[in-house]
Length: 90
Image (tube, rainbow, N blue to C red):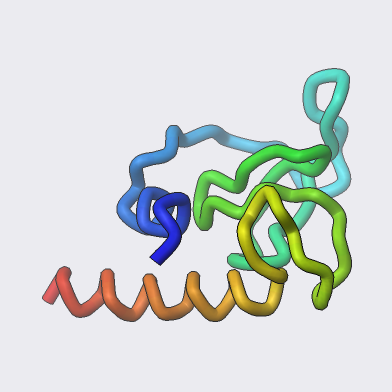
């Protein structure tokens, strides 16, 4: 499992409160819905604090070197990590 997915699922990334989707954040970012976990995150190569995906704007089937997979593959890895995490919390 990719380390960024594991770190995100285990809550190892810092927390931040974001304004509504579509809102400008600082000077370089806009709040968006993460294509992996469907939570609020930032665009422009920011890393989602919930799932570890680095938003690079590539389409679903395009390989992302920053993330080491396509969007679809990473999403499946994230879902699997959530299932494994839930199994450890029981």
